[in-house]
Image (tube, rainbow, N blue to C red; front, side, top):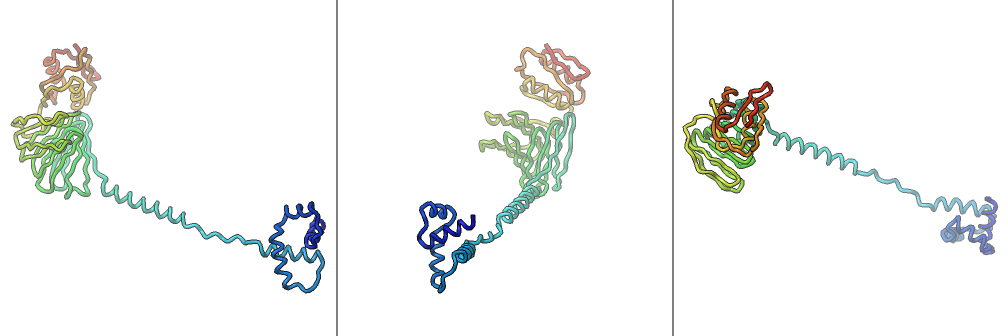
Length: 304
């Protein structure tokens, strides 16, 4: 096979190669590149050489003329990706350490008292929770409340209680905030507070007054003689609370299931819920609404 190639190359160089032989060479070699190499060689050739020697020289020149693959520089992308990853981790750690907060919550039939570093105090009602940032507390006294709580606030930076319905801002006072579904109730015991809605409307509430915020807006201010939050007293009063919400409130304070087997659950209750005697509490509710009740082992059942 090698001998046949040598013969064809010799014939091509002499110009006596057949069309079939030329086609065979063109399928294996770049004849134009070989011709350029030979033209360079002719400048230095003085003697006639054997065709085998010519082929050996051609092979050597082809190898030397073939472009060598340059070593690819090592990619810097892995280092860039690693740097971005480490930077992201550092930023995430800084953000969460700066913005991570403390959560305090109560179960049903449970109350908790927490005193902040500035001396302010919160008393959480059953089934409630607050979230705040201890790291920035001295400059930003902001609390997210879900449920019901009493706050006793010392003077200092603005003190803000945020809820899903509105927020309360004070400088130093004592007040109660109670959010239940779409109603936010505020009672002020000392000083004065500012209640703001999500629609940038606000009302100032002074000591001895209370107000409610609903989707329709603020109710009229009402006066009271209370000095502490309703859940800290013997009973808590409600004004037109739906029957199903009343069942939730009963369960929240006594931590027992409450069944409402009624033909119409759209009825509203206005009255008091006794907080230290579930039998008496159920009896008062039943008498007020014209229902019957049963104190079962598993909870309270109201029925018609």
